[in-house]
Length: 182
Ligand code: FES
Ligand code: FES
Image (cartoon, rainbow, N blue to C red):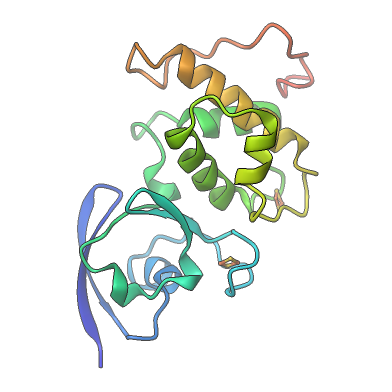
């Protein structure tokens, strides 16, 4: 029997009609129309479907939509700091080549956001550990780690200013190639 749930998705209250067997991933993509969250394996192995549920990153393919009644969900569509401003993570991924085909990118960005929300200054091992469940078939991960480190640096530099979309200042140690400019 279908169930009506009310969730807050990307700061907007949404009423969704879901079947008891619908995953949160399917509800987001097919009912809420938010197709930025990707379906890779559908069994919890790839991380492409990662969203933030009540402050924690989850594989949305493993969560029943019916269980999210009253929950707060952030998807990739809600990551931007303003309609015309990218989140620093998105900016860094773009600048440093952290995305190639892009299929894994929404999941990795949401996992990275959850990491930086909890730990604003992660070392490379902590970044690797955080994204260990997110599979990328294109990049070899090095540029993803560079991009997350770069975004963390930018966010710490602007944490007092309250403007995460402030003009990017590139770390002096990055080459033009690393900045994605060569
Ligand atoms: S689609 Fe959910 S982990 Fe792969
Ligand atoms: S950029 Fe293609 S799978 Fe990661």
